[in-house]
Amino acid sequence: MANINFLTSGKVFEIPDNSNVLRVSLRYDGELPNRCGGGICGNCVFKTESGQENLDQVKIQERRKLGEEWLEKGYRLGCQTFVTEGDVAVSWDEEVTNIVKKRKPDRYQKVK
Ligand code: FES
Image (cartoon, rainbow, N blue to C red; front, side, top):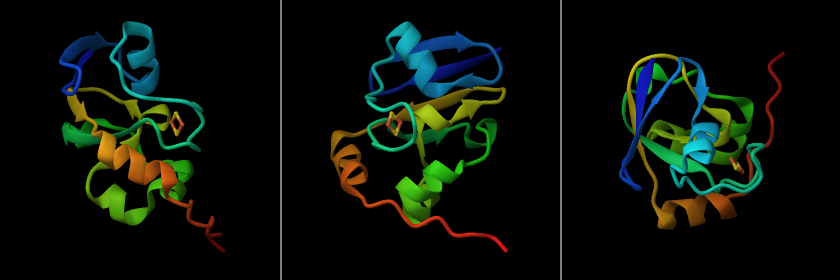
C-alpha cells in the first residue's frame, strides 16, 4: 500500500501497489483533469513533487506528448503512469496543462 497526495485538490488516498494515477483520481474524485485516457490529449499532465522513484517507467505516449523537456522537469501523464509502491505527491497547473495540450507530439523514433 502507498499514499498518493493530489496536492492541487488537497486530497490524499491510500492505494494498492501498481495503481494508475488517473484511475485513482477518477475513482476517488482526485480532480486530475483528463479527457482521452489514452496518452493523446495531454489533459492529465501532472508534476511529480515527490516520490518520482515510486513511479513506473515512462511510456512511449508520454515521450511523444511531453517530449524530453517536460519529462526532465518531472511531468508525466496520469493516464499512462502507475505508482509501483511507496508514496507519491503530484500537482498540476492549468497553464502547463494548456501548453502540453497544444504541444504537437514528437515523432516516434524507431530504435533499430
Ligand atoms: S487523459 Fe488524455 S493524455 Fe491522459
